Image (cartoon, rainbow over all chains, first blue to last red; front, top):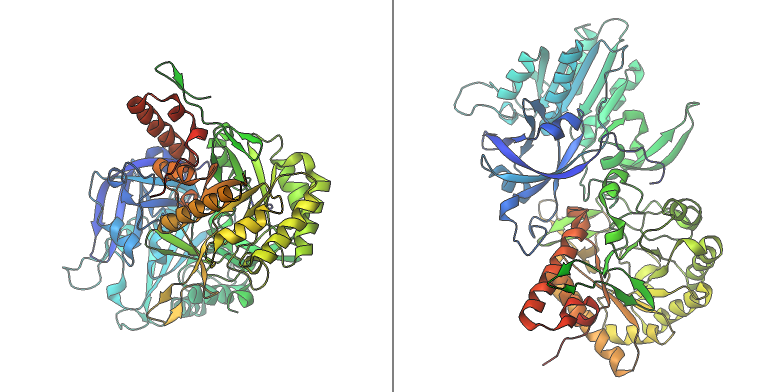
Amino acid sequence: MLNEPPPQSPARIETVRVTRVETDGRFTRLSFHAPEQAKRALAGQFFQVTCHPADEIDSFHTIPLSPLLNRPFSINRWIEDGFSILFEMVGPGTRRLGASKQGDRITVLGPLGQGLAEIPPHVQHLVLIAGGIGVAAFTAFAQLAQQRGVACSLYYGVNRGTDLALRNPRRKGYQSRLLDEFDSLGCRCALSSMLDGSFFPGTVVDLLERDRQENCVPFGDPVEGILMIGCGPWAMINALAKWAMPYQIPCFLLIEEMMGCGLGICRSCVVPGYDIREDGTKTPRNIAVCREGPLIAAERIDWEKKWE
Amino acid sequence: MGMKDNGEFIDMRVDLAGMELRNPVILSSGTWGYGVEAPDIIEQVDSSRLGGIALKGIFYEPRCGNPTPRLAETSGGLLNAIGLEGVGVKAMAEEVLPCLHPRKTRIFVNICGTSREEYARITGELVQKAWDLFDVIEVNISCPNLDCGGMEFGTDPKSAAEVAGAVRKAAEGKPVFVKLAPLVTDISSIALAVAETGAEGLSLVNTYPAMLIDLDRRKPVLAKNFGGLSGPAIKPMALRAVCLVRKALKTHALSTAIIGMGGISSGRDALEFLVAGADAISLGTINFVNPLAYEKILSAMEEIMRDRFAQTGNPEDLRVRFWSGTLTLN
């Protein structure tokens, strides 16, 4: 708690306007007019977003009563005058937010947490590994890679082709606006699916291993110059961390946890982890995902304790 | 003293067990950390607009708390079973409190123990090492999320009084506030037992023991099965507790101070707690939704007081301390 790193950029509570709503009925992307917030945010950082439009909140109360808590969303991408968030409508909060209309005013707190300030100079290829809606944060990383002239690949694992975010439900096949955007950012996309023959059959980590065995881009022999960032369910990011270790590929994870405040105060979103000193010695302690993450080096997680 | 209005001043000062607070709004323990975690947000917190802050509870030793999930949302509230993850008394006295010095608001150090001796030991160490760095010791005998300690002392008048007495003795005159558990057979008898030890105040109330179930998995949502319910959902129950305790104290001619809390999310809520008998109020869950909520609530209280004064012309309506305990029961 006391030895946690300081925030990377100043967080503010502000009300922003929804400029665009895109939805496929299951996944929704909201774009906000928020030039200042977008300028302050790093890829991987998040905002705490109130589920209700600001104008609907009872004037007597300073908060909406249900859903009560804000929802944390990584920035999905930068747009000309702000940023977007992308989410799956699964519960009362995301469904309420998904019903937002263009012009609604929504209160956001952020940017929060630790993101990727810069791609380290030795990195030639940024490899993004997503499981399901874990893909939501990655457009921003692909934008950063493009700006810096660093090659970028997306490995995206879904259960079925219909689980791809922002798919056009009226078109046959698996065309997705999100994947088109990665294409146009020069980011190579590789898809895997557990239950659908259209893509590589298996997990996204199986797909990584196949590409490595076949020395496909980005994996040369030896494997070097790669930075991996994974986001998805715990089982997936654990498998990814285990896979990356023997090849000594630097691997960061964007951790998803149930959050209360987003500021490191309520201690809800902690994961068991370590402080690692330069000599390699590890001191165990709880890592608050909202404050020290969501971007956390894979070796800082205590996986055994996590699965206890 | 506050804003000038038609020649009259709004006066938000309150007296809490002999201490003057510049206004009655306090931030509850566990909902603002140690006041040092979010410096960028804290920069925006004008401490001179806060009555006080109760720091996150500590045991003698540092603790890592319960497994996750530790938090879950429900209609109008949330359940937590954080389990008092905390830094311990040494870091509190040597790192946290010096960081908050010079203090711009009243600081409540919240303590918890697994035995009467632990409570007394923490108090002794705070008094010895950090006397000048805090204002109040708040004794948590009401945390529902611990395997041992916490609430077990808060559900029985005798053991509650024993802990309160032990802390008072070790506190060497620092005001002692005891935070009570609400889900008990008779909160008044526990409050009276604590008040009779000479404890300066009561914090009413902690969270209500509760649970949520994940129907698909047929499992509790929280890793510890049960947690404490807080937020607007508990406000009417917390109000009742404050009302009952104030009535019992009055009957026994005791003037023990009360900090009212439980789901306060508006200026009206805050004033209702004062009217019910609290001398000050504390904000909890709402801080997670908006860490700067205290400002809005304070402004809303002032607005309601001015409106009331405009109707009644009674200058007491502009002095918040005169709102306390003005409830008339039917």
